[in-house]
Image (tube, each protein chain N blue to C red):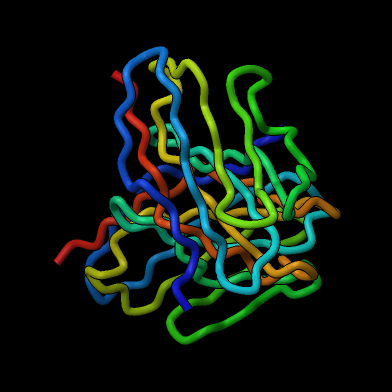
Length: 115
Length: 111
């Protein structure tokens, strides 16, 4: 059981480019959550998805950020026209469909640096 | 307020006990969690406690919950250098599925 897989581990983008972050949930998990961790801060919730559905995007910035979780393949967090303030670690977590009460399983994160 | 609050730093000597404190915000929080993050790594779930419990013990870890004061603590017995990391508490508010995290406590274990 490979756990939650995120790639790339590190991503460097110039201002104005697009960043695409990928997350493959644990086998058997159908719910995916994206969190952002700014330097020396805790994790902030961004978006919660099930297959082909966005359930809660209350933590997503209104512009430039989007997320999807297609029927086949990984969940993608997409940041268009990146700015320096987007530099952060982005973590994905997954949980089984019914019960997240026992805590989510997190991936190792993608560290985005905007230069 | 809306924040989950933790002190930023804690240093202990190897072999001593560590106590990391957290104040959460929502009296309707159902589950409370402790996560560990080592440098450059993701978050590892250490333990969780349901809101109708006041204590949970798991090997070297003891979680205490004071629901009246909305205070959560994590005690690590016989702290080792491998315990050096950032520890986050998190709450699951009401029926929400996402977690709300504190800013983390950097634990440093001195030899």
